[in-house]
Length: 240
Image 1 (cartoon, rainbow, N blue to C red):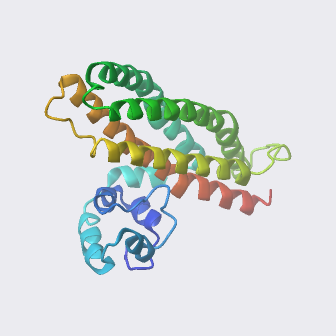
Image 2: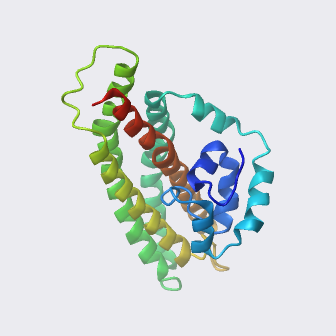
């Protein structure tokens, strides 16, 4: 892939997820804000685009088998992959992190009052994400599967779909909200750092929170930059 200042950020990560850590290091949002040019993203992050491009080209020379696998999937298969890989991860980690953050707040909240804010924000995120995943699994993803069936020539009643653009816009707004929330959590925990007086539970919780955010970034990337644009394009091609 030839990268220049006009290349869309999301397309870079779509081609190779190995570019993601480079962008994240420079505070460039590739998931929620991945639909802008590299030049604009660099300007927003006060980064020299001419210096960043060679670094991106360097890491993208490495083979990314995961990205190749994702690109090989039909949209319905991608939706299934997201549910099995990312939705299941969120559902598994929410109770673990809620319990650990409550424990940390009780044990370390006096010296680290920011833990109460982290616990509160994660509680809000847990509720919103649970509802968000349900809407995708019960509303949007079934619509995507019907569109793929219609593309393959199977008999599908598309008259009841109502269009994918409206639910996608809702999902995009909710992605933005969670991206902002975790950006705040990262800031007030100093990048998920364990303080000198932190215990093993503190370290495990911060590490898991960081992992949760990283998984969320990839999850949102797959939807914002691949699944959602593909579904809108397919619906247009079918004339729905």
